[in-house]
Image (tube, rainbow, N blue to C red; front, top):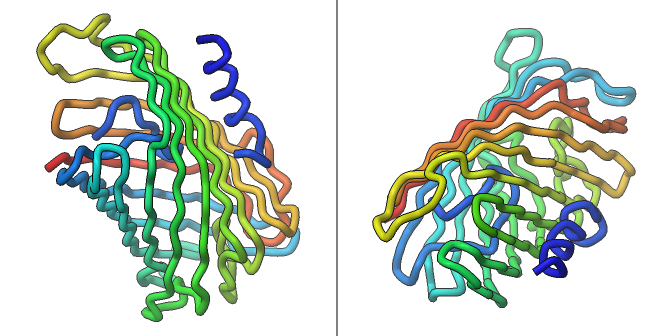
Amino acid sequence: MKTKFFLVLFLSITPCLSAVAQQATNTLAPTMPGKGNLVIRPIFNYYKLKPSEQNLFSGTVLESAVHFDYGLTGATSLMLHVSEERQDEDQEMRLKGFTDLKMTFKWRFYQDDFGPVDTFRLGFLAGIEMPTGSSEFTSDTTVPFIGLSAMYIEGRHGVTSSVVFHATDGDFDDPVLAGDKEANHIAFNAAYLYRIKPEAYSQDLVAAWYIGAELIGNWESDDDLEILLAPILLYEAPSWAFELTYGKPIYEDVNFRPETDYTVSLGFRFLF
């Protein structure tokens, strides 16, 4: 099992590579709803931004998003991402509108369940971002993306990682977040979660509490690079989940969009 564990860590720390159990907020996991099931996930992301060398934006961004993840088979799903964004500069509302529509196909191509909750999984994902044309937050380009994800759970410990490559992302007049610019974008994330309750599962499905941390990385082909560390609080019940994170940069070399001061994410997941 050590080989599998180090493979997940390798994906986690290597940028050029890249309500379900123990799924972190930003890190994509090779998990998905069962066939015919639907997960609806509303999530609210708050970004406090500060000026960089080439971008003087100072203010906040609030993103309200909903993910719809529908299980096609036991190992595949189709996910739709819809979001609205609001930017405030100097305490005054500047812009508000819908962002690009994102559609993702997920395929878990490997799964080894070696215990009641212990598992090792690998996943592939691909999709497109499509312009909606409704505001300044939507681009005029269709952006393809492709990625890999990995998950290793043993006992009360879980490690997940993902890497996603977006080809020629963004193309906004005033880029604010990673992916807004006309530059290729690699999102690389990794998460560790520890189950604090229950200590062990019984035959009955019960709710679980997790604590942990997530590394959130964004590299763009104009050499902007940012890595955040975000503690996680996660509650998972059989049919719904709650998540809360607070992220601060631990490495930042950003010039062509604003730097991140901190981020807060609040999300829910509902299984139908």
